Image (cartoon, rainbow, N blue to C red; front, side, top):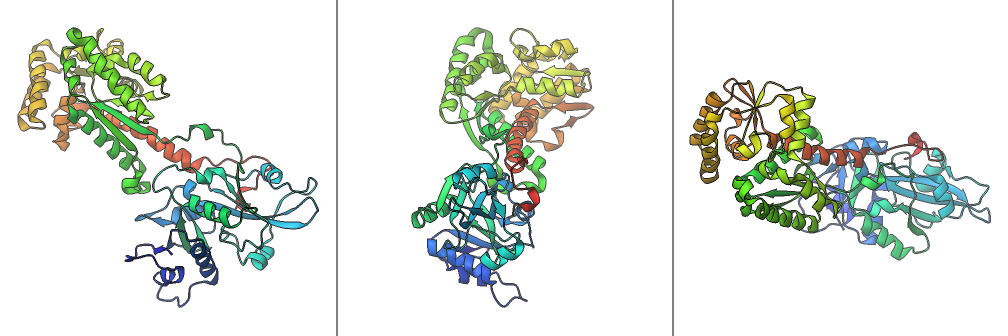
Length: 478
């Protein structure tokens, strides 16, 4: 009992009722193999959604054409690769085995040979198109795990099929036809098959070993904020917008975002007087970092310039939990060096903009980055407190204009005060340029860096396809 894609049901329907809703005007019948596939999943009592796609003949091609949650295209890792092979057992009886794995992996036939205890002198081989058609009524691009189990000796699943990587935690495959797709929960499929065919269904390591297999941990970001809390919100907004911008048509909506845990610590406001309150500020930062580490984050970000003074101490906490601390200051310094930005003034409270002992940006001093003019320091402190109280208000923008005119002689300005970043978020046309000044917003760069970490994970998850000897060639893995 399942559902048809983009068709609203009051309740689950049987496979044929679902498929009937998806027939096109020039189609009168559901293809036989589709009927067989839906009967298979109905008999096992699986949840599923049946869908249509343009003709697809390979896993990579199919993944780009599948429809799921309003989006065309799924990660390659969410497409199920299924291949039917022939082998000889120890008594030299000819047998069939069905292999299944995530489509960004390839089968290692040496591993498979050992798992099924095939005859040592007989290699595993792929079926000819004629035999595939005659025995399984299938062709290249329509092989799936929904087969007559009486026809196969084994049905094998690579253990990675049961891992959960990213929402919605389902996989897709063909439903017996190049234009029909089906979405399932792979763990439900394997569990149901193992229950009914305990001697035939096996889960094991079937695939070549990925060089980067060990780094496939989904990023979960922790944001420490509180000075003020809007800084964390602004950073989160930059993270999500950067993901949209970088993924473009590949972005899959809400489910395409990472998990984010925010810890807002009001006591971070004490950092406005860091020299006098260093130890108490550190105590709250340490507690916040430990809390996020214990909550399961993989990366921590700190939406505050001043408290990046504690970078090494934060890293020492994170290292105990195998968590990565991503530094905003290091991200900004790297950006400035890569883009060879020299004509620039940094504005922020003195702890940050003086580029001395307390500043996480002190490396900028060697790049001839200028601090702002002394005459605007009192005004800068005022704008910080003003924005904390009033948020993104036109009064704050007027004060910022005064600071730029009186205190910034260069064409480029680094906004090392999160309150100003929050202010500019309310005036989108001012975020990149105000008058003659080019605005460089560290919170924006920080959000882009976090987005890059997440997008690298998405790309690795989808494209870790590598070939080795003793694997089925790419054009033969169905």
